[in-house]
Length: 252
Image (spheres, rainbow, N blue to C red):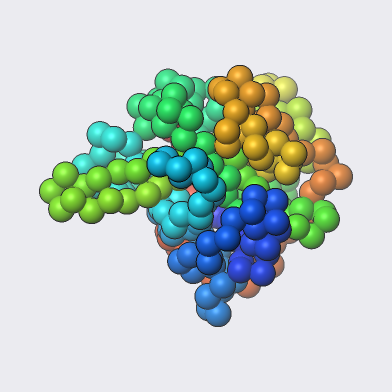
């Protein structure tokens, strides 16, 4: 799972414009001179989806942290006894069709792609957390598999777009299984290490427009050679929640 990522900037979005034929100007902070910066949970980022009315591809600015239809506020309430809000910026693929926050957008086919220049994960091999940053080895931005939703505040009428990144089990991936804090109660082959899913460009259309079966089949963790990964240099500004939980708690 991922709790911080670096969005693709305006010049990097050229890759997506050529792939998708998107002609809209970049929205929100994409291209802002204050960036690059990382986005944390409940920060604002851009995602690509098929427009509900026309079916055309569009760029949408929204909150990284999916808002369920039943939510009373855009930011979830704090978790009892934990001090932090319930995080919905990652969604387990195995239960995406069951969890209240995600099941309706999933059933409606509200899948999206999140442009990301890089993302970070915690490595605990030294006995303490060392953030690792993951980029594409070919120098292009990632296209992360995601789910989106549109929520309306019943009191104010405000419409808020939001999105989440889909995660898969990475226990058997030779690179990604090195991330996250080991669970001493589980055997090494059943740690349930989680990883967000960078889509191969050839799978973009199936993820956005395919059937549920086609979209599910499009999900696969990249080969180890596709990653440029290593210890992060803590020089990027952060957005959203400033302090990240080193334990990377299990998300909804």
